Length: 349
Image: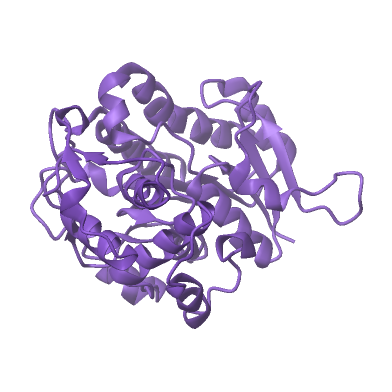
């Protein structure tokens, strides 16, 4: 039985990755921060009573600001694979909290990869890099595209990317960067633009809100379905040699297109409900991201199956049902048709 350690396990990617690895027969250890208010909704369905036999899912208190605790945890768990997904990951928030973002998103990677080196357990290491690192670089962006970060979050991710490469080249660690373009799902945080759109739309239909407030509608992103992207993370660590990979769909759509597609699917005229609020605009904008993931397609044999339109429908269906509203029901059919059977049923309800 393989053992994996996941930072950021309570987030969108961490929870889907835990689902996926458990379906592969892994033992999972996740790091969570100690808090008086629980934030584990995405992994509640994975809970197992540790007093029962055959338990394969464990949670440990920890913090990316505490290097000693990370070293102890890695030494004691002795994972075969470490998936470092934990970060302050909201780009707009990083402008308000640049120092905290740099500490957790940037130095947090140094702490955990140095803890891995010191513990000498020989685990394979996955660093969650981001398409935001490309920033103002012209699309399409591939592994050879120079980085031009346009936010404190992106700058911290560039630092973390190079730390992973330096530890790979300097200490011969099996350290890989997955440069993932935007990936969304019903588990996406409610302050991220895609989920903000789908959730607010559902609340508008239920009469709980009147308008959807957004910033830059013209920003273009390469949007995919998060469960498929965690499969790519796993594939990256199964290769014979460590390397870095861009993961994306190769298509770009604007925020405006996401809005139009969402409201049309729900049967509403978006122009009646969407308003622009400058406070949601960034001081420095990333205008156009589109991946060139040909390396991942050829070497990993990975390619996306869920289209942009299907992604929107999956998310809208989920949020309409969460509000107790009838939905067109295409989302469930799409998941079944794409054979994504390992996704837990509560996302299909």
